[in-house]
Amino acid sequence: MKSRDVRAQAYSMPLTSPACPRGPHRFVDREYLIITYRTDPDRLRGAVPQPLEFHDPLVQFEFIRMPDSAGLG
Image (cartoon, rainbow, N blue to C red; front, side, top):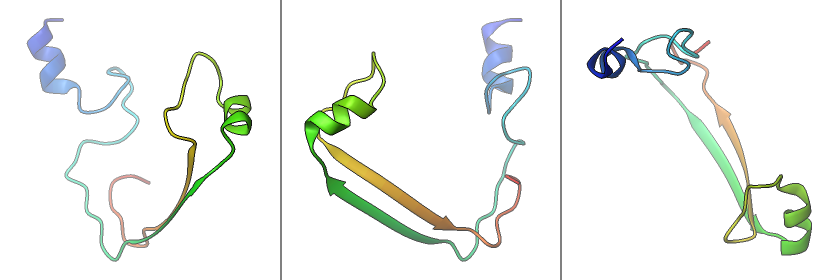
């Protein structure tokens, strides 16, 4: 397989078993609630697996309501 073939087919990974179908995807009436807060850096360090690191001790929770999405399950 040549690199141009990979670029033409690689819309999702892994290449031989894509995680989602090829688009276009349609999203209607989406609602988001995103909560971000600063936490104790030592506690966050204990929760983040090595070798990952963080720069700011911020935690995010995202709740997404997508009642009319098409193509992603």
